[in-house]
Image (cartoon, rainbow, N blue to C red; front, side):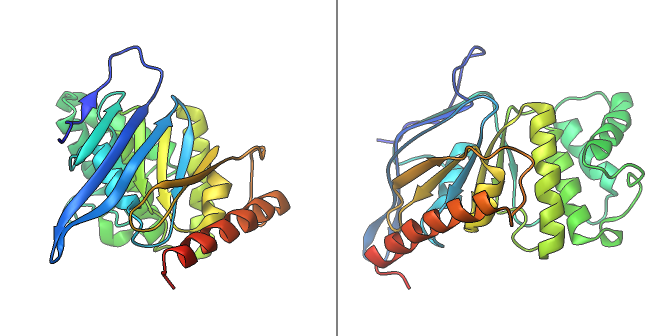
Length: 259
């Protein structure tokens, strides 16, 4: 029996709590189990990366936490409504960078006289000061993702959900945005649940890495990342832990017959 997404009370111990969550979809051969009995907590201010092979249900799980879909079984509670950032920036091309952010502020009920100032503050936070009037086509891929991040932050959520937001970017731009995201997370105290299939990205960013098995997705293993910030993707401790996780991930892929 499906349990609806619930918002937690004001005083919470977790930014998100998933209790025995499963999700099935109808398929040609009947119901297909995509996620199976997943229990996972994200603490206030914690940065968690969700890692797994393509098709293991990472994005499905994120959509459930975001409230875009409901679990088939189990329950999900969050500290308020999460903000969601996708791989594609999804900016409205007919609006400027600032107006894209203002739209999110409008939906949050921010009065019109306050929106521009707040939008400019958010652009400064993502190091895009002065870009308020720029159209989407005038922005690079990395700049567009910064605007998308600012728009997500405009929702004033305590939990930021990120679905492979840097996957389409080149390595240098991705490296810069890793630094920016870490800085923003540290400055704001946000909780972050970040989906990726890139092991080194997961280790570079997270305090905790959660590995999902493949079809159906289950929590296979977790790692606490005790590597001090600032981290770089080529740092020896990052590479060492990434190798350990990659070996486990390959074993999961082999075990489930995915090549």
